[in-house]
Image 1 (cartoon, rainbow over the protein chains, first blue to last red):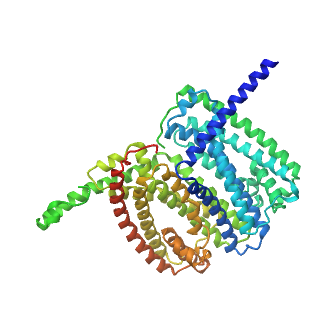
Image 2: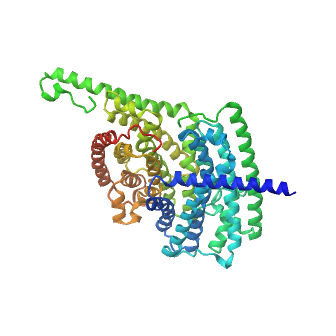
Image 3: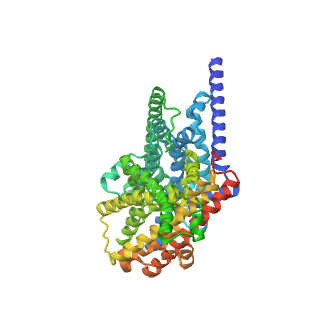
Length: 290
Length: 293
């Protein structure tokens, strides 16, 4: 028993070390091309601009006084940064390491577990996303005077919802990373497209009620629909979506948990199958120059 | 030869037909180089047809999301048209950033950049070919975006001046790709910053240039600042020619066309100047062939 415990402990410590080193490497790659101040500005300007587009759209449509509506889409848009960053962070690593730095084969040859390595690399993106979301929430609350705060003290609920969504994004990112292992020309486009599809289907910047009914049905199979809804309930205190109003907070959490578990299984399965194909076809160091 | 001068021509010692022949000998390889560089993009765009689907599909998702926002807040129907037009023009901006400005950065990675610089033609002809090919490539995608917008969202474009629309589009393209040619030279000194710079110039420009709303909403000072990006005036003029008073235009559309004409001249001249300057600097600093920085 003690031997089994020691073995597991050793494995976990080793995995943690892999994760930390990969995260450090990811952070260096993402940030050391410039000085920290410029990097911070760079990381903030994009999301703030993206959110301000929404604000100006409300302005030109004469709906700027609809504080709850604006906060609803503002929060969704802000938190979706996590999904796009983590999703792309995991999958893009395969592309960059294979094509640009040409180190993917060495990562496979090394002692690191590849999945731990990919998740670690994406952790840098998670950190950048956290910074962006924090700035946006402060900007929304202090500058735009939106009713953005944790309502009814539901910190724990919000945190669990947040983490489940990020886990779903990481799992789908793994699936995409698998696809990138075996694709030459479409890998990067597929991951950006998936983020775009999720942005649309999850009703990140509008209530899903305005989608055609067949798309609404599909959106209920997307974990991020429940994720954004749960986060908005915590941060805005209300929902403006009639379709989602029928779900209680517990039902939102339950749907999110089940769909996240499904995403984890799917992501790992796709990665495992793709990896086997990659090995059998000798694609680990292919250069596509795309 | 790459500096575009010939000793005999400069000294004015040749007869007219002889001078013409000498100029043709100078221009002909440059035209062939431009044609060759454009050919790669035009053929590349058609060879992998599945890319066409992704290239249209991907930006259209974002465009569709903005349409749904306007629908959710019950904005006037013309606003859907603004979004579709902006979404179609997004392709040109992305093409300018990623396939013009960043192109020399990618070419350095693939090893083509040194070949461009040792070729017996002006690098401007390579840039011209890139621009023409990129425009062709993007026009197909943007046209499909407009068609999708009309079919899926029933956008109704009421053309107020077809000539004005065409002219504003052409002059916007010249100014925009002139800017792209200029930026590609500036990017010669970049390493990984190039990728980040192009990445950074997306959402902030969508905001400042009013891709999804009339730029007038930003106020005169901010709109004037954004006027340095040709798509600001271009989109505003095209919106006015397409939607008339509903476009909530900023300046008169013909004024905007005139400003774009001026920007075209400035950017094309700037592209030539920047190319000479940056290429010299890159050579001095030994960065022309430096990869993975």
